[in-house]
Structures are given as C-alpha cells and as structure tokens.
Length: 250
Image (cartoon, rainbow, N blue to C red; front, side, top):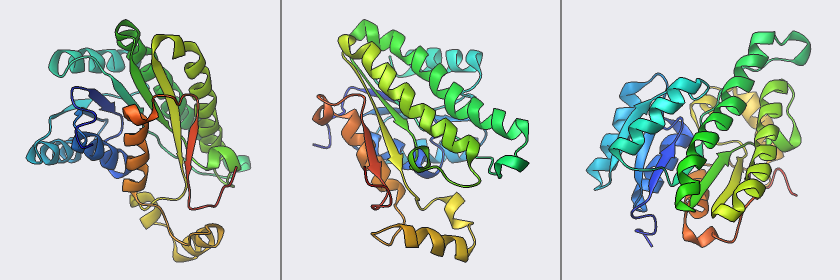
C-alpha cells in the first residue's frame, strides 16, 4: 500500500516542522509528490524536502504566507508548473497567540483568525479550481480538540479551529458532486516544540485529562491524514477524525 498515492501531488501548508513535517514525510512515503510550504524557515523546509528525496520521493519547497492572497496564487502557480495540479491539500499551517479574553489584544485575535481561518479559505478556494476540472480532490483540514472543548486562554484559537470544522462541512457539501472529499483531523495535545516548552505542572494537568495518559506523536496525525488522502477514505466527506487519546469523546 506504500504506493497508494503514486501520481498524486500534495500541498502541505506549514510543512517545515512539527505536525506538518510529519504529514509531508508520510504522504511522500506513500507515493505522493509533495509541495512543502513554509513562511519563514527555509532551512527547515529544505531539510524536509531533502529527506523526502533521500528516501526516493519527490518534493519541492514553496514560500508563501497563506493569509496573503497574492502569495497563495503565486505558490499554486509555481506548484502547477513544477509538480503539477494539486490533488491533495492539507491545510495545516496555524499560529497561536494565547491570552485570557479580558487581556487579549485585538491584534492577537486578528492574527490568529487571519492565518488559521483566512489561510484555510484562500488555499481551499485556489485548490478547488484544479480539482473541479479533474473531478477529483482530497482536502484535509487540521483543526484541534479545543475547537470542540474550548480552552481557557485560547479564545481566538478555539474560535478559529471551530470555524475550520464549519468550513470543512460546508466545502464537503459544495464540492461532493465534483468528486472532491473534504475532511478534518482534530488533534489533542501532541509532542511538538510548542508542548515541549510547557512547564511541567501544565503538562501534568494535561495528562490528567487524557485517558491514554500520553501525548500524541506527530506521526499519529500524519497517519490519519494519509488515510484521508488515500482511496481508503473515498466514501467519507465532511467528517472529523478525533485523535486525542480519549480526552474528548463524541
């Protein structure tokens, strides 16, 4: 099954590190040519692309701020010229600007909404142009458990990630007749640079909320994305896979 994405072109936003990096590597391992998007860390993006090539895959890096319309357009045009039309879009890029609501600055709200929501909107809108022509596409949006449960200090981030779920469902309805499947993955707390920097007492508090008593790995999220990107999930659209160790049970 390692070649089940062979011949497909995948764009992963925010793919230079963390969950995005793991997703890019996993898609490539399963045969996809991967467009590695980054906004600032060119060296990290190059490292991901070079690792993919070293393992026999195909990858190129593309710099773009996903919340800037002109840069999104230029990125997609460059991908189409270099790798071909995007068959699989993974809207992974996101930022946090945590603060309690009463202390949250307007720019902390604006920047999180701009990247997490507007970025998903711009990339999805551009991707479906080619997907509609081909009558095929897989769009996977990375949401978060806090979009369902809320989280103190993340008024902006939880709103954005809940919004991503609404966008997923609406896009699934709008594009199903064109052969485009749109689904989401909602990770819980995952071992990344962000969680590694948390104080021990905060980590302990999180662990108490997780029945499996462990943080997720980026590879856990990547495996779910591969499933959603593959033919194995062709009868699924508008759904969310919850990967959180049991801390949120539907």
